[in-house]
Amino acid sequence: MFNGMKLDMIDVGTGALRVRYGGYGPPLLLLHGHPRTHMTWGRIADFLSPHFTVVCPDLRGFGKSFQPLDTSDSRNSSKRAKAGDCIELMRRLGYDRFAVAGHDRGSYVAFRLAMDHPDAVTKVAVIDSIPIIEHLERIDWRFARDWYHWFFFAQPEKPERAINADPTAWYNAIKPDLMGREAYADLMTAIHDPAVVHGMVEDYRAGLTVDRLHELQDRAEGRRVECPLLCLWSIRDDLEDFFGDPREIWRSWAVDVQGHGIDSGHHVAEENPVDLANSLLPFFESR
Image 1 (cartoon, helix red, strand yellow):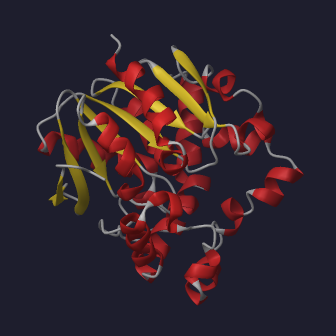
Image 2 (tube, one colour; image 1 turned 180 degrees about the vertical axis):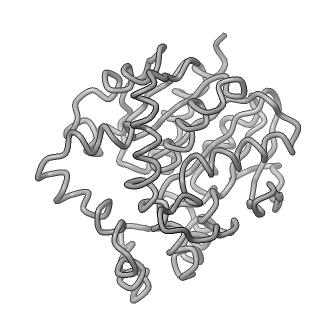
């Protein structure tokens, strides 16, 4: 995985991000979700790097990137703060304009990049997500049952205590079979680091505080993503079961939406990298 790509720590002003990058062609930023690191993109990067200069960071709070300072509203773990890191990262690599794809929690950073930095983002792909406030306004008892971690992680201290008591048991769905031994070892290191566990949980706390407020402000001001948006979702996950066609929801937030489902479980970059790459490639290559 990451054939011929460079691994580095790059200072973005607020701290250093661990970044894997390389390839040929226009820049494409790939943003991971929870509890992954940039390693989740390994096979996708190999598919895309002959066509794009692929940039895969660990988001702040995750993996081996820096841990932000705590605040009462978790604003330093907000998607706006993480989007700011990404803008600075790409500038330091020499790119003022770039495309971006995000999965799971990373899709919220990709969305925030497109909303806050329209002059920088040429296209955006969101994978297995809808905006946070769309989740919160549409929840039912099934969502509360199956996505309980959204609300548990919002509580102070207790989530970290529960996870750190036995990280392997908490994340018992993580297996090396599909992600590969190197990615698995990297992820095991991350989830056994209490500082990283706290950083990942803070991402959820920010979701229900400052991120929610940012989306409410976007809606009140009528702001929408102006660049083309690709909405992809895993059909063996539960997003469509809970919320219907996610493209219809994204059309309230973006002017140009396309997309489709992919035959996969939630971690599509590991479970079906071929179909995901074949979905991303024509979208980002088209004019």
